[in-house]
Image (cartoon, rainbow, N blue to C red; front, side):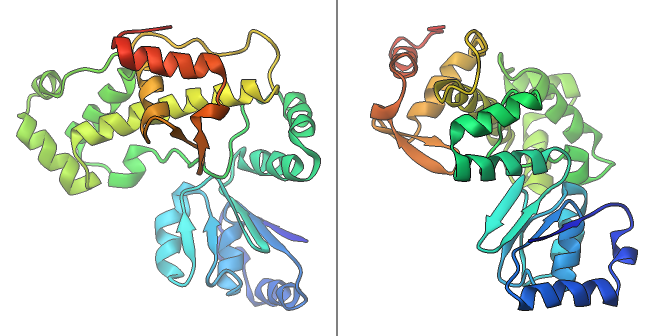
Length: 272
């Protein structure tokens, strides 16, 4: 196994010698991996052609344009056949525990994560949180202020009309900004923020069910987030809900979780 660790000025560091070494290992059938901008080295060597991969969000757009034969994603980490790539930061720890869980079971992975004081293991279905400014650039103060206000009011969402009034623009103008620079609507962007938070709660609940946490560590749902939690569980219908990158049957859920979802949907109030 060969793992290429990235860093600053990766373009200058990846010379012909580095490319040659990577290609030689690839020709020998050695599994290849990369951390952060190390993915650039693998792509430069051509050993990621036809593969999915991950790279730090700061480099995602520029490098993906440079290597069109490689599918760059915003995932925290990607395992595609004999190639594995991590986005950077703490993602290698998540990936390591993912491998441990696959090889040694959930209990062992939980023990390792607790040694690192990790409260929740992220999976390959999780994505990097890419800052808004990195996506749209500077010069769009109204759009950034709108997004920041939404992020500050996830559990108790504001009306879009009030938000537009506070920003001193019409709702129509706000909708045009979101459509032009983010290719979505303000309502959908707000919903995505809230669903991402709900999914975090779902994953925390699943982590508790797997026995990876000590008693009493289950996060408490507050206010409207418990309703969104229920909606996220039941969003695919009465029998299944989305978990990570797959679908889980509601019959396999903890009874309390299922009752929370059903009660919240039926009573249209906070069951927590």
